[in-house]
Length: 108
Image 1 (cartoon, helix red, strand yellow):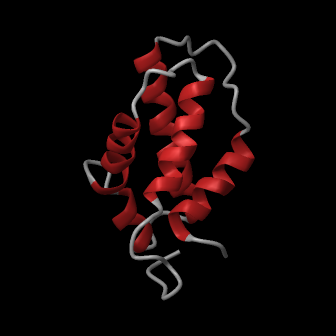
Image 2 (tube, rainbow, N blue to C red):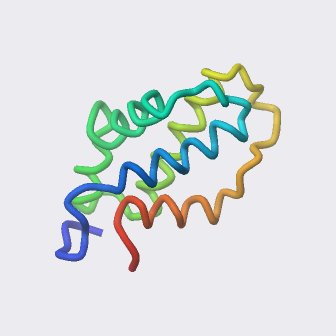
């Protein structure tokens, strides 16, 4: 991907938290706050995982960056809600990856 002129300076955090909210509700985490979800996303993109800088440097593709965010959200939600890893996840992965890619990088 690399740092191209069409890449936004920052991801659309409002949209990302909205997708995370949907995931939380589907995982039984209605009591999870938007602030908690935002903190998880922020940690993955700008904190210890530094996913945003890796994406801008071309080390991660759009899809890999979206999957990084989603995997960490899913793991955190399973821990936070006590949901079993054996239970099927209720969200459609392919469409969610595409939506998260758009929130991260804008439309292609």
